[in-house]
Image 1 (cartoon, rainbow, N blue to C red):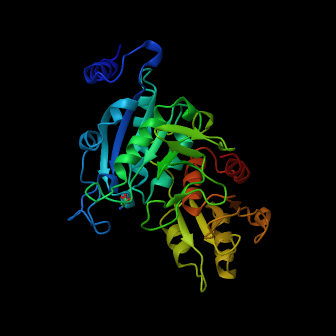
Image 2 (image 1 turned 180 degrees about the horizontal axis):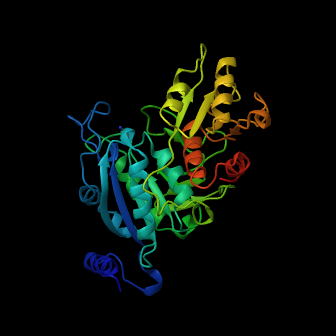
Length: 354
Ligand code: DAS
């Protein structure tokens, strides 16, 4: 029996809250902390904006929620401590390798990742494409710092641990859980700059709810993820350079020229409408494609698919389209696709698969 399981069982017996039976063993859940508001501290108990994120360590986060012991044997590790606007490819590779390493341990039933809310949706989708296990991985954040009245972090953490230890969450892909809702990594996005119900899966919908510590699923993702992924980052020390340009009135080529000059191998263009491109932008992207840079048309619009050969003759320019992925998630898939192939048809298949 591993040390983690012994510790968990000892704690459970000590608390006297649970008679341990092999069949009723509490799940073993590892909490990996990365920073964010959930670990934030404000000057006063009413400070909900303008606080400092990434101040409180994982052990204090766990101590603040003694109820965790009723739903799982938890252990914690601080993978890094950042406000998530500073998340980057290097942090992602470090986190993904650690998650896959811990999930291989037979006595680990699930993982919770505490994370800033600004880029939680991106980390969730990245892990959805590179985690090699069906075990639950649940990413959780908070919109109010730990020091605030009615901080949402503790209940969000409790719910996330309950979901990560639940059998219902096995095979559902990476999940994001705040505000009593369970969102799938592919479709979740932050929809409000400050409210606690900010995480939604607009139009396509959440996967379920967490009710008094019970995960209840009503839907499942229709796209491949986690154990079905073709992507493997275990031997990568970096990811291909892919950036996002944003379309608007008066669109010009300054941003895409700079990306090309910097040596990008992929560019995601968040076009207006259904991924529409202004005449100069289309011409320049076509040139860059001919020079070997992969071009993916996405849209600045929050919902609906960017449709191939709609606002652009993608067959002719050899661009790919992001389907319903947001520009920030299309960047992630294009980066990983470029670790496998430079073939546009293969890359387009990946956008229709994940
Ligand atoms: N700066 C934000 C972040 O770390 C705070 C938060 O978690 O909401 O994402």
